[in-house]
Figure 1: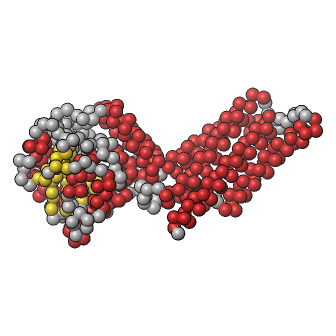
Figure 2: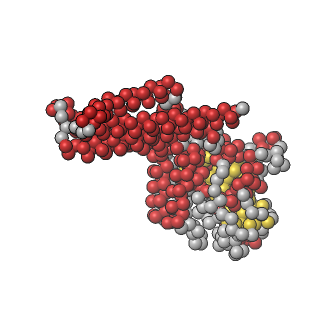
Figure 3: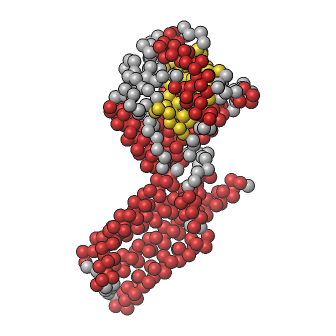
Length: 418
């Protein structure tokens, strides 16, 4: 079968089984579609398919499935990959004339398959298809959206540099989303077909897997890891540690901006407040003891001014992005307690009260200096009051702009719902 150029708009038909020729009853049957994306894997594809076929009965018995189908997608291979795959009668083979990407191959195989559960594994012989049995069982029993085969166990033969990269990506993603995963780029997974609406769109390239991990975790989907053995691949790897590593980082960052930007903004806000508290502690203690400030403290005050102003900007941005979520991509209702509270406080009369407080503080700090300058054309105002006034005025202006943008969002929301 020759596949036309693959686009995300086409793959969204996965979410509409009736349009794909599948009835509701067919979609409710417990079945698994295993997709094997392959690019010039003639050395390994035959063994990988053989192992998948030999594992079908075990997978069905372990998970109570009625059917396991295998789809091989030759992603622009220039060797005998497609020819070898066609030698297996029980395997559906899809051929891309031109290379379209690892993710594109998987999505096309899922579209052509009929399983209510969707799986994939790499064609290089590194993964054991027997693991699909336990993965499918857990997916059904635990109502998981994604079950991921973790390659980070003691039986793994993963090269050291890739193991280190995986741990770093996992640590970063865990810090930003508050949930831990050990293997962000595993090439063996099981996904519920009806969970794709929360995962799509996914990229076409090799960053398909870390992007799925990021979207699942950031969108608060149920992701479960299952340890699995991993052996050294057959043939040469298509993965570039540097190029694809940078791409994986961009994918994780894009997922955060897409689904949970509030978490990133709040993390930066907390960091600003910690630094501000540490810098302001000594001058504050000194003032209460001596009722004066030393000249050298001006530098700390300037840094505290910048940290405080930036912190307020991050806090306002958190509330704004929480409100903007209605215009963004579909995402699960998450337990984002603090963004919800902040967005609830920074509105209406409370927002007006906060703005008024900043203006009053500005007047209290700068009014004596303004009166002195009007009468004497000189200012003897202490630098600490000048910085305090500048800070409160800056905060007032930021709050006013935030209130204006909030009003814009409310108008847009009313236009959208009308």
